[in-house]
Image (cartoon, rainbow, N blue to C red):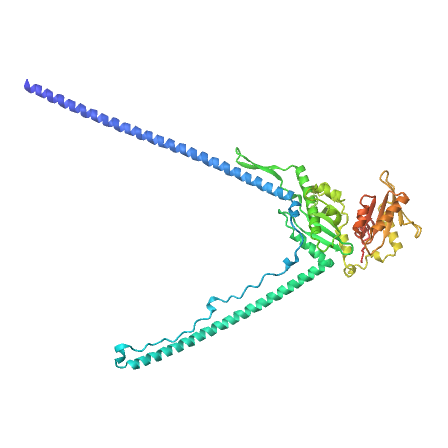
Length: 535
């Protein structure tokens, strides 16, 4: 009994131990599973966090990308505004600038650089002889001390002699190189000073010639004024031709204007997020037209302002400006020069303008300018005077006669022959022209009748074969004759030019003044006569 109960106790203890072990094993498994689930959960959480961070990064990157693209758009729009501002301030840009040329700035005023030899050529210090001290104390009693001292002195003297010879050789070589460099420097300096003197003499001569209103000097001076004119944006050719008549004080200029492409075709830029594109909005054609008209008028007024303001010699009484566009015909592809603005204005009238306040196009028209309504479409105007005609009239006699023997010189005609020529010209132009008898014309050389209804009427024509400038008195006489004859219009034709008073008097009257250049143009266009005026 006792043994059985002991066995049972052992079995129960064993069973409990086994159960405990099993429970411990199961607890270990559960712990491992829990830890595994925790690791898996942490991993999932880490992955989710990484995904969230990645999405946030992508979101930030996308936002940064959009911001960068918008900044690009802002830069493009700012650049557009800068270009437009420059185009709209072409005239204002020059009003605060003094266009007079200071002749002193044309001189060579910089001093020639001083002579600076290389440091290695600086004089050296002559070597000194080595001092050999005599033996002292007990040393002087050693056998041979005196002899040894004498030998040392002799050796020191010999070494010093060699050092002096080497020093002399080196210094001689340095001196030779120094003198060579100095000679080359003196030659360069002399050449520079000669160039300075030559240049400054040329400046003095140029200044004197300009102030005495010599034709070539006046032309060169005004070319310099326009060449120095800095336009605030690109696309402006700044090409021109100038002619000057010293007798009348007229300066004629043919100026190349920029093409309409100088105006940006875009009005603004914007970013389309859905397409990730930067798109531009086209500028309206009406805005381009207005801007281009403003540019043409601005360049015209600016050029007149610069030339009149820079007129130190008081050489200019009047300027004739022809603005042309040098381009190609879109229909034929041929190169063409299209005149789009032409104006003749006196200095006295121009200097009364307040250019900082004017409407540019209106101002030009008020000055009597011919201004194209559509320069952007290359709509041409008839120049007041063609530059080629002006240029021929201003050529000196020797040049004008060269190779032109077969072309008639109008100044070779008698006054009567010239009147016949003018009468025939207006007949060719479609007027019913009657030449008056000499000495019975009452100040009338020819009477013409424009047979057009409403616009037509009686026209009084006077012809002046003059070499000198025609003054205002001739225009007054023509106007008085018109009133006496009851004519609708008066035309005065001359082979020279007119003074500013003549133009001012005829400004608001039905009088047309045709100078030598205009006459040559009319003869060429309507009579097929390639004449010349050799003064």
